Length: 366
Image 1: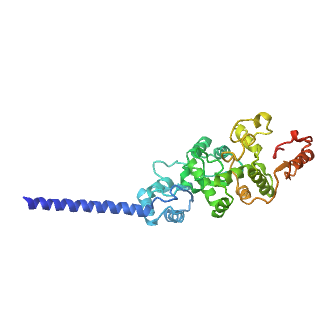
Image 2 (image 1 turned 60 degrees about the vertical axis):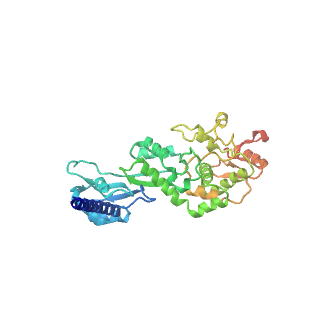
Image 3 (image 1 turned 180 degrees about the horizontal axis):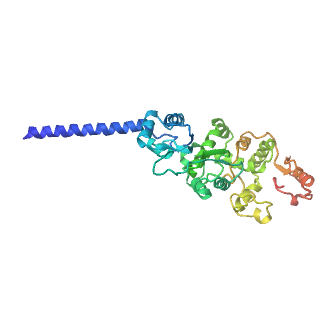
């Protein structure tokens, strides 16, 4: 009685092992051909499919974009699906499964009128708030409009990015959505666009720039915060390093920045994101972003600065200036001063604001 039982047990064991080998082999095969999770998982990739493309050329494009590990598997899945390629501009994501990619870029016989995804482009301007980026995304027809973009910004995983490690708890991603022109497929989600902006920042804020920030005793967050103010203040490129130097000098001396754009950030309303001129009531608005009331840098960036303003903070001019005033002569330039008395004279000359020290305007008032 024992021997038959042992034989049955052996057969069951062999069968179970065989099943595990088959299942394990299939999972390994899928793991190999479809890739595995890495730091780039979820990265949006824009792929163009034309009428001239076939499964072979698309496999090449997907492999070049590192979306495929084994092209024959993709071509086999295409053949098995029986669906046709749908030409268009697609936003795919690193780490997508091969069947998922096939479903995304094909059209079945039961959906002959499915629209092809079109190419969209958004130009995010230096010095804009992220709400303005959201409006620009909505204007070109991105999925979900402005609301979806704002929600994606607010829910983006900051811990995914090393450069956001100095971000204070509760801070938004204002300042880190890198201004640029972004092209993407109309099938892209708002989170894809936010990812592209953050990835762009990560690439443009180089290791050398990060080392320079450390040498200056500044966190990345402090650099970007100050750069956002410089971006809103400077009109011509040549003055960015000088304006950056003025604010850095004031910080060293413990002087308040008294920067109008920080107040504009506080009192802004949709449709009027940078209100001016500011009145006395605006300047007295109680907010940690109001650099008239609170010394030091504001809690975070007030806008999204471009590369030039970030570099200006990291490589400011070696000057002793503590003040500046707009010349208001059509040149978009400023007159800079070291002493309070010089600032008074410049305000008298360029703003016709002559008087004693009690009538002096703050360093950036125009």
